[in-house]
Length: 75
Image (tube, rainbow, N blue to C red; front, side, top):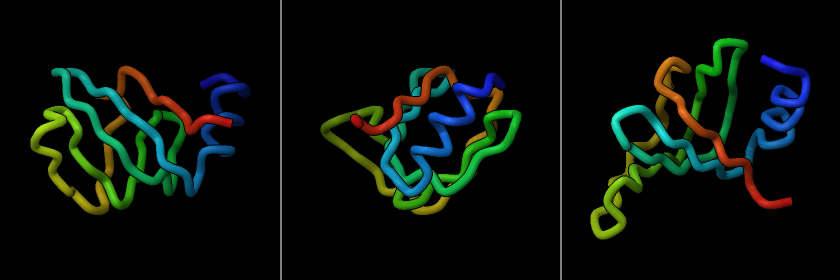
């Protein structure tokens, strides 16, 4: 993971991020932690794959292998 990626994720800690996963699933949650493999810990997580049926997931760990995109909060 590049230094810039690490810096952006560190600045996003405690903030809401959008995560797109393999298979088309989309998540929105507060970033609580991450590691060099891009494994993520999210809390207050919601599955936003179907905007008409948003599901609350709570605290989850996302395996980095499944992450396609992480969108940090607007600055």
